Amino acid sequence: MQDQAKAIAVLTSGGDASGMNMAIRAVTRSALAQGWAVYGVSEGYAGLIAAPEEGKIRRLTARDVGGILGLGGTVLGSARCKDFHDASVRARGIANLAALGVDALVVIGGNGSQAGAHALHEQGLAVVGLASTIDNDLEGSDITLGADTAANVAVDAVDKLRVTSSSHRRASIVEVMGRSCGYLALTVGLATGAEAIVLPEQDLGPDEVAQRIASAYDRGKHHAIVIVAEGARYNAAALAEILEREHRERVRFDMRVTVLGHIQRGGTPTVFDRLLGARLGAHAIDCLERGEHGVLVGLRGNEVVTTPLADVVGKQKPLGLELVELAQTLAQ
Image 1 (cartoon, rainbow, N blue to C red):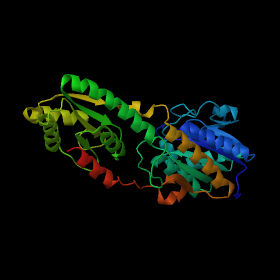
Image 2 (tube, rainbow, N blue to C red):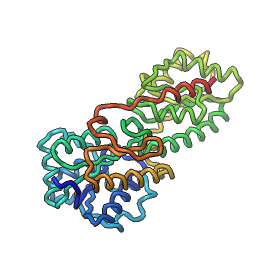
Image 3 (cartoon, rainbow, N blue to C red):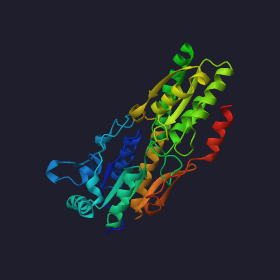
C-alpha cells in the first residue's frame, strides 16, 4: 500500500448527525487541494459493497459539496449494513474502491461505524475515522460531531414545554435519545434546570423522581421537568405510568410525556458543529497526506488529535461525574 493516498473516498455511516455535511465538504475540498481525486459513497457501508452498476460511489468536485455546510443530516445518505460483519463482504468493498484507484477511505460516524473502519484497516485499507455521534459516547473525542446540535434542539424543545407546563401546572417527562449513554439527557437536564435526570449510568428510580417532583411543588413551582434517556431502566412512558399509579398523591402535578425522538437528529448544525466538522475533516486529510491511518480524528480540549481505532472500538466513553454532581446540586 502507498504511504500517501492519491485518491480517497468518504462515507457517512450509522445515525446521521448535524455537522456531517460540513465534514464531507472539508474532506472533499482539502483532498482536492492536495490534487487527489475524491469519491463520495452513498448509503454508508451498504453503498460501499454494492455492485458497481448501482452507482453508489461517484466522483465529487468542489461544486458537489457547495452549499451543504448548513444542512442537517448527510447528503451522502446513511444505512445500516449487517452484512459488513463478514470479512469477505468487506473485501468486496475494498475491491470496489481499488477498481476506481481509491486507496484510502474516510469514515464519518460513531461506534459501529468506527468498528467497521477498524475492520477495513485490519484488511489492509488505509482508513481514517471522524468522531460523529449525537450520543457523544465515542472514545477519542471529548465531544463528537452532532452532539452539540442535538443538545440544542432538545433544550429548545424543553424550554417550550416549560411554558405550557407552567400554564397548566404540569410535570413534563421528556425522553431524549441515548440508548446506553446519558450524555444528551444529562446536558439537556442541566441546561434546562430539570428537577430530575434519569440516566442509564445512574439508576434514579420512580420513588426518587416522585420525591423531587413533590419538592418542586412544595417550593411553589408551577411546573416540573424530568429528563429521561431512552436507554434508562424506565423510559418516559413507563416512568410516568408508575408515578401515576403509585405516587399520584405525592406528585400532585398533572403529568405529560413527550418523546423527542429523531427530531434531535434533524437540527440545522450549530456554529460549534460546523467548525468541528471543518476541523475534523481537514485533519483527516492531513493524516492521510503524511501516511497516518488506522486512527480516529477527534477533539481533546481545543486540539484536534488522533487515537488508534484499536483503542476506540468496543469501548464507551464514561459520563463526566462532575456534570452529574453539578446537576444534582443545582436541582435542589
